[in-house]
Amino acid sequence: MRRREFIALISGATAAWPFVARAQQPAKIARIGFLGLGPAATQSWRVRALRAGLRNLGYIDGKNIVIELRWADTVEQLPELAAELVRM
Image (tube, rainbow, N blue to C red; front, side, top):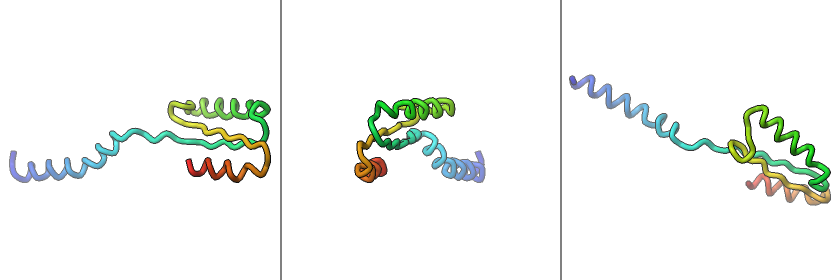
């Protein structure tokens, strides 16, 4: 191998290294926060609809997406639960 070919090979490998390293990193799992007002039992149809809609788009809860559910009994609890979801 001639010197110029060798230098070109090393330069190309060095330039491609960040792309190879980035491709090997595990994919981040998306996280969705769901904040409901009232008892969870009365709102379960909304959660089922959300999961079904996401499933139709190829997202499966626990596999490639995480849905964090929070339920407030009163309106006063909403800001605290929303802040908790944002921190996550």
